[in-house]
Image: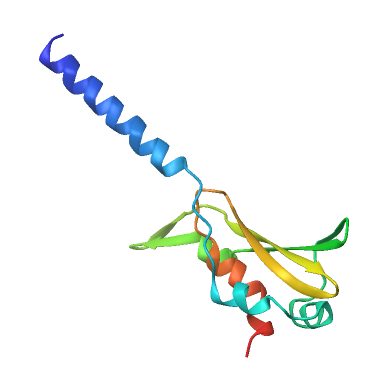
Length: 129
C-alpha cells in the first residue's frame, strides 16, 4: 500500500469510528425531577404535569406518556451576525402507575443520540417544590 493510501484509509476509518460514537444512543440516567415523582399519587401528577399525550393500560399498571419538545429558539445557534439550525429535539417521559401511585418514570430522548434531559425534567418542573 502506498503511504497516501494508508493516510486516506486511516482517516476514513477514524471518521467511521467517530460517526459511530456520535450515533450511539445517550445513556439515560436518573434525574432529580424524575426521582421526586416516585410515590406521588396519579392525581398529583395530572394536576402539575397536565394531561398526558397518551394513556396506556398494561395489566395492573397504567402508563402516562408525556412529550416535550425544545423551544424553537433553542434550535437556532447564533454565529456572528447570523445563525444556523441545530437538531430538533425533545423527550418522551413515561410515568408508570400502579395502585394509584407512581412507581417509576422513564425518559427517552428524541433523537436517541441527543441529551434532551432538560426537556424531560421540564415536564415535571411544576410538580416539585
